[in-house]
Image (cartoon, chains in turn cyan, blue):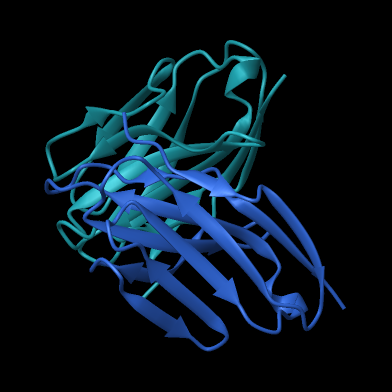
Length: 113
Length: 112
């Protein structure tokens, strides 16, 4: 039981390049989330998926797209990376409606030069 | 917009000292969670408090939910270097899978 896995762990991109961050969970959770974490800014929600087949914008969605591929997988795509997207990205999942207790992956450290 | 304010932002203490960190809001939450994040890792859920006035203990950590469900505190007794990390509080709204509201965290350093 791996919980929430994310790939890659580290990535360096040049401005304008694109990439997809992958996330998978094996806990049969309905909801999945993408956050970014920057010093002094805390965790900010980018997009979330309350259930398979649905996605919604969070606090900072600009420059990102998501795909809920199936119940297990939720990917985050940067179409044209910018230096402002340098951050640590966390995927999370939750299964208990109402309490919304979240289980986080280990993170992807992205640098855009 | 619901906001959670955490204080203090940074805390550096000696091993064996006690400490309390706070999580405050003007909004009511249906429940409140505390997470700990160690360097290079994702946050890990410590506890969820649901009822106003509720107190939960996890070894040397004591969590309290305010009577009005707008605030919470985390008290650590006899802190140890292993307690070092970023402590995040997060509030859940009243409807279904509304995303959590996270505070910005308290960064704790316990020096041996």
